[in-house]
Image (cartoon, rainbow, N blue to C red; front, side, top):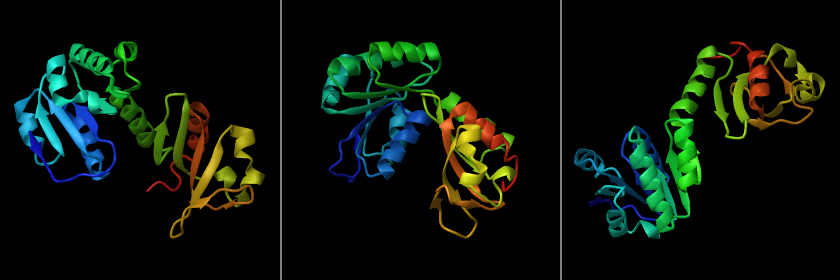
Length: 230
């Protein structure tokens, strides 16, 4: 086990699996000044990341005794980032749930995998490949500058202002009434971000932050085409 001198008062997080997703989560947590215990059964990965993360341990996460020795019951938050080994992923989530971990996040490869993870104790299931694929598709299509979709069919996007909003206030262009989306804010080149109000006037090449049901956000953003995309 390797350890760095990064400590804080926030609750430490257990991250199991040091593939690309697990390392991304663990590294981001460290940058946020959170203490991390990272676990993987591959000694090469453990050695590779031992100087970058707070704590790194080699262990078989499907072995309940090994998890007990690591003190996983003391963690409130855990992320199971195991990739292709679906059985190991499920058994690890089950072991963490039985150990009493209160907040378990788990990576899923398929929707069926995600359903199983939820049934054995995962509180949150993420589909990183699917989510990123959808985001890249929207960015490549050119209708959005950034995009986040939530599990309940709600999305937030950054897009070029459609022609129909140019030189009008939001009250005049009525995006909420006509398209079912809310313009949350406006970013104009060289100026600070401003929260949108009914009397906010939109100019050509403004960027809008919009929210609403995913399909309605997609429809509205498509109206902007590639205007203002750089």
